[in-house]
Length: 218
Image 1 (tube, rainbow, N blue to C red):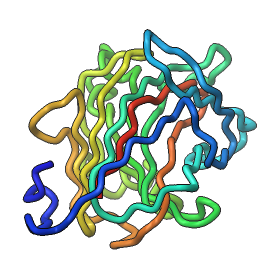
Image 2 (image 1 turned 30 degrees about the vertical axis):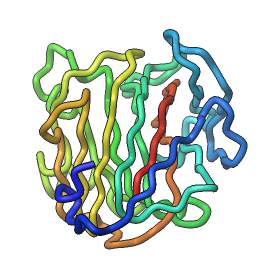
Image 3 (image 1 turned 180 degrees about the horizontal axis):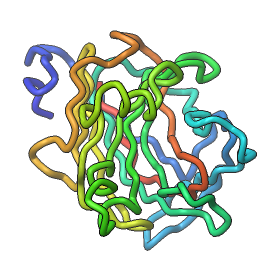
């Protein structure tokens, strides 16, 4: 890990931990169902939205209760797609929540909208990745008050494995996709400040997602 990217001195000790999601035992679902699965040749965890249609954005995640994260790197492969009975606005939303507070009352999150990546509408393409801070800063508020600042474009395909890397340092976060050397999205003002909390596997309305190869370094 290039520690300089995180603003961490070279002498700081780091610990890297792989979390076997297909054998997960320490997790708490919130409006989702999780189950081990083999998806496109990889052992994974399937996370499916089970919330009533009236459930608010940001209330669907699998909380990894054995994690405790403040600064460091979260790496994972994920794939998101739209459920057959999903509403018109579904995009296969899938991502990672971090610094999740007890009972998922507050958290930071970076997520993808896979069906936007190759849309014919350029505006939709520009909304391929998103940062939110639950509950005070949902995507609707961020897009209205800070247009273009907290979302960006990246090439995505629904139901395809996508490598994601999130680097977090103090109130800054960078999202890397597909192993790229440069970040797809840079957030310089995480809304919860320099907090600490659990990691969550995050999905949006009408989503079925798969996660594998989760590694946390801090």
